[in-house]
Length: 280
Image (cartoon, rainbow, N blue to C red; front, side, top):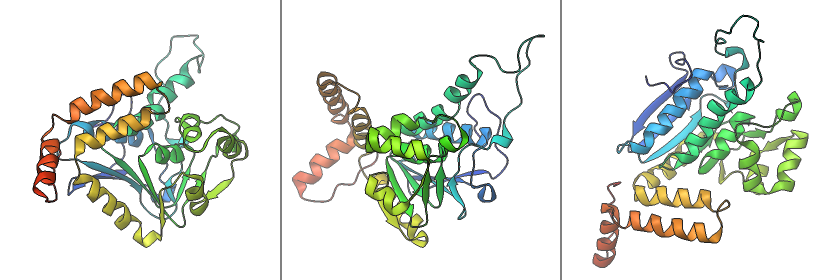
């Protein structure tokens, strides 16, 4: 089992991966703990997402949680890795320790979702809270069960949002709405999350995996490199000036038009038939 740098391996079965029909299904499998992430689980997910970009057998990713208590309720604070040895007289917590933990842990996981060259779908089965909410928001598409709840819990703990939360939430719903969720830490239902623009679709829990799987199957049969370019350009759109955005668009088109899938798409159009994309 591959593990990302800086963490220990997760306990057996705590996070599960299977690839079927070009779709990598990544399941958080600690339902009794609300699927809170240990450091090992977090690093394993990061490694799998990073590997997915170059894996030609993977053309889409679905991230979900087991059970009905949580999609992911954030970090498992009980499962912190042991502290590194320190020189005599050094403080137990040095300046820089906390920020380094965030940068190399949850921020790296969220970045792996956003930087993955394959589309990533969150299938939110239950509560997404704290870092677990931001993990869902980092995904390209979000399908939620009707029972799902979304909670910015940080203010309840007296801490600032992390795991890329301010960056992600503000871009999705704007600063005023984002501040409301951050300031009060109120629970948001799946229906309200859809109205706010945090969720693409809300379905009965029994239909969640089928709905996410149907979208993933469509993406897995699409022009994979072009989808990766679309993802990159869209994620960059709110950060780039016009000149940079136009340059990146032209560079992406240069890359995509050299793919076999582009040639197939043009041939299928000329021959008036559905294209059959190979993913390269």
